[in-house]
Every structure is written in C-alpha cells, then in structure tokens.
Image (cartoon, rainbow, N blue to C red; front, side, top):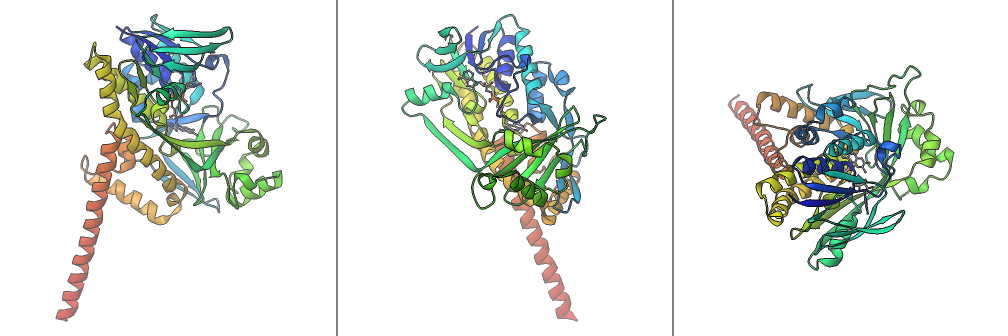
Length: 440
Ligand SMILES: Cc1cc2nc3c(=O)[nH]c(=O)nc-3n(C[C@H](O)[C@H](O)[C@H](O)COP(=O)(O)OP(=O)(O)OC[C@H]3O[C@@H](n4cnc5c(N)ncnc54)[C@H](O)[C@@H]3O)c2cc1C
C-alpha cells in the first residue's frame, strides 16, 4: 500500500481520495479552502453542473451514485429560446430516458468528501494551501494559519484545478515539460431566475435552456429549490461586450433586446450583473502528467477544458476511474501505473478540449437554425433505424463511455459516410430524371 498526499479537495480530489481509501492506501487530502459543509460556497465557479454517464459511472463504482442523483434534476433536451420568445425543444436522444442531470457543485463536493471520510485511512485537512512540491522527494509545502508545514508521501497527486500549484512545480522542475494555455475571447457571468412564490420553477424544469445569439449566448440549468442558474457567455471586449456595459440602463437595454422573455423572470438582474464576477474560460494542455513514481496530475490540473460539452467534471471523474484501474493493474509499480494512466487519458483529454470548443459554436449559433434542428432529427432517425451502428456524437460523448478520441473519430467517419450517401442519392436522382427526360 502507498501513502498519497492529495492536493485539492474539489470534485475530483474528494472522489479520488474515496477511490484510494477504498483500496486501503493511506491518504492525506489538503485543501486551501474551508470545509464546504460549513457553508463556504465554492466561489468563482459554476453553481451547478451537468453530470452524465461517465461521471455517474465513477460515482457508481464507489456506491454513491444513487444518493448523489437524489438531488439532481434530469434535463432531457435543449429548450431553445428565440428572440421573439418562441420555444423549440430538441431532445438529447431518441430515447427519452437518456438525460443529463443538473446538480449543485457544493452538494456534490460535500458528497465526495464524505465518501472519502468513510475510510479511516483518509484524512482531510482544510485551510491548507499548497505552495509547491519537491518532486524528487514527494514533499508538498503547505501554508496554514499556524505557519508553513510539509507533507510527505510516497506520491503527491495534484487535483488542484486549472491553476494547479503541483503542475506549476512540475513546470519549474521538468525541462521538457510541455504547457499550453489558451483563453477564449468570451467570459461568463452567473445570473438567477428565482422560484415562483410556491417554490415551483418559472420555466420547463427538465431542460437545459439556451438563448443562442450567434456570437454569444445565455444558458440556464434548473436547481432543486425551484430556481435556475443562468450563465451569460459573452465577449470580454468589442462593440457590444462585457467591456462596453457601463450603466444599469446598458444592462437593461442589452437584456431587453436579446433575452426579452427572460427579463421578467429575473428580478435581481441588475444586482446579479453588478455583483457577480466575470469568469474567464481556459483550455489547458500539458505533458507529461506524472513525474517518475512521485507526482501525478488528475482532473482540471491536467486538462482544463471550456464548459460547453458539460464534460470537464465528468472527464475528471473518469480520470479517477482510470487511475484506480492502472494502480490496480500495476500493483507495486506506481511509475508504470502513472505512465499507463497518462497514456490512456492524454489523447482523450485533448480530443475533449477540441470537442468542447466546437460545441460552443454549436450551442451559441447553430442551435438557432432550422438546418441544425433537421440534422438532429436525422441523427435520431438514423440512431433508431441503425441501433448500435449509428450513434450521434453528442450521444457517444454524453451517454456512453466510449473514449472521447474514439467518439470523435467515429463521428467524423459517420459524417463522411452520411454525406457520401446523400451525394450518391442526389446523383442517382439527377441521372434518373435525366434518363426519364431523355426518353420522353
Ligand atoms: C462555468 C463552468 C461550468 C461548468 N459546467 C460543467 C458541467 O456542466 N459539467 C461538467 O462535467 N463540468 C463542468 N465544468 C467543469 C468543472 O467545473 C471542472 O472540470 C471540475 O470542477 C474539475 O474538477 P477538479 O477537482 O479537477 O478541479 P476543481 O473542482 O477546480 O477543484 C480543485 C480544488 O483544489 C483546490 N486548490 C486549488 N489550488 C490549491 C492549492 N494551491 N492548495 C490546496 N488546494 C488547492 C481548490 O480550492 C479546489 O477545491 C464547468 C466549469 C465552468 C467554469
């Protein structure tokens, strides 16, 4: 058995501690924030998230899927709001039972930490901020209110999110470490649609609402208390952007023009807009994700992606499953386990990063078009007609555990066959008409 020092008890940190604890490893989990169960809401990130098949599978493996999903709200498709307030519902799948689930980040974070703490060999230390790691000795430096301490393990695992201190130490110490970060020109701001006075939802609750406006969009996910959390994704700069909104009137004018059906449902729009931070959206790629048998990266620390496929946390949870498998398969050889984990996950994380950026364009622009809706209907018709043979990309990513890179490849092949078939049918049609006209 090994002794692991985990840095970061966010979504993946808590879950990984539970996985390692279950196997009998000694785990010390250090988190810079206070205990989320004491009401410190995880600031600066989305209040709710969509969890789907990959994330649910990871929770199932340690027996906490049912308790987690009790507080989730199934979303069966996208509810598209056009500017005139007309709604179009586009189901996610031909099977109405297939859905994604809106879940509160704070509640999910608490659930995974509690699952970890059920193992007496897992200890969680809040208010411990990692400032760096000595890779060769697997020693982490931690700032606490009482001063600086060190924590030594057989290995340190960085589960400390997109701006990982563990990854930073690897960057500083490993000459050939590759690192790339790229920011979108868009930022995001969270806003609220409160419940009706009787506690019910003001819009369809079992849907992910989208107001697609070509270069920007707003989305809304339901919460169990009857509210919706809306997120506006908008350019930081430009003629119409976060940067040009100066006054309350500017806010009102923009929302009245772009989201007229949402405005009457948002009584705290001005306060929310003024008080809530504007977040940035980053994609981070790096390599390698490990150093010998001493250090490893998991979740956003290894591969932060933009949120438009609703997969960042799902992928981070899938990392935990794969790392657990690799440690078991390579029992006694942690370096081989880390290397195998990196080999299995890296191309999938890269594929997801590309898919997530592609889906931003789909959500903010294409979902509004009739052509897009027709393609979705064709996708579903083909899926029903060719079960197990044709699977739309969204379904593969969201409702299966097919590796992301394989899903992307298969979708490209399917599209090529489909376009070739359509062109073939057109040619046959034209030739038939030409022959018919030639004869008459
Ligand atoms: C707007 C938005 C919407 C999203 N929606 C979805 C969605 O619908 N579905 C989905 O699957 N994903 C979604 N994501 C992505 C998801 O939030 C992340 O992929 C997920 O949180 C990654 O989990 P993690 O544990 O790796 O990192 P985090 O959740 O960021 O956790 C990292 C933890 O490490 C701690 N930490 C950081 N630095 C230190 C340090 N130096 N010392 C000690 N502790 C430290 C942090 O306090 C935090 O608790 C969304 C992201 C954003 C920004």
